[in-house]
Image (cartoon, rainbow, N blue to C red; front, side, top):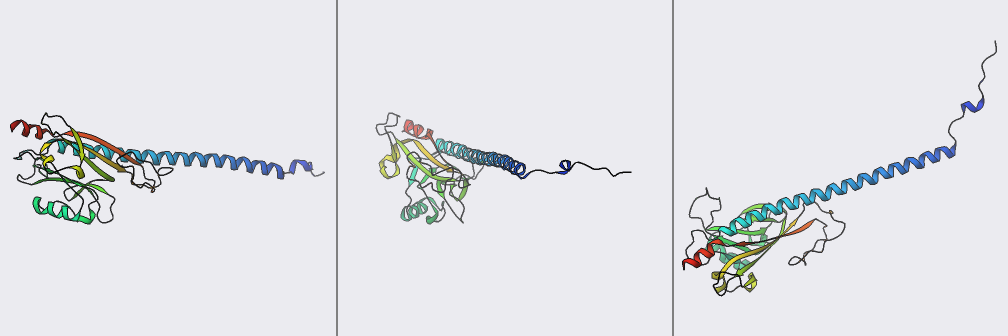
Length: 248
């Protein structure tokens, strides 16, 4: 009985050219999948940062608007809001006059807006407290936050600027919005509204492709860390200012 013999060409494998073509196709598919993964991860990073910034921004705005509108409640006299410059001397005088409300001067990163008559612990808090101070601060290496007296309220607030609406002729309409540096001692009695700007930033760095160019009043802020930055602004009518004005 003769053994079976198979043609030699039935035992041949892939040729070198076929292997090279298969490798190139595999590399192309891998590159496409990697590009899709990177794009998806990038999109997720941006959306996550945007969600964080908008959520914190809306919360900070809501808190500030609520307290600004109620500033001066149960306060005798016409001065129902006060701005404090960010200097060691001004902060020291402020704490002497209104009690110890802020952290160490070196960690206060913005001007302070003080709202007399408000209870720091909310409606259920003890009566007779001096009021509430808001400012940007940073302690123990934590990112800048919006502070409510000594407590960090919202993290990631990189800037706070307030403009005060002055009714200089007593017609209950704002005649001009002034920054703290332009306010005189007499102007505080005529403030009936406040317009604030919040600069929010994401916790993650390298989110944007390049440094952002921010709008005024934060157009000089360094954004080289490539965090996602967004500016929030709102205007609050100081309701008790009109009540005091009508009463007087």
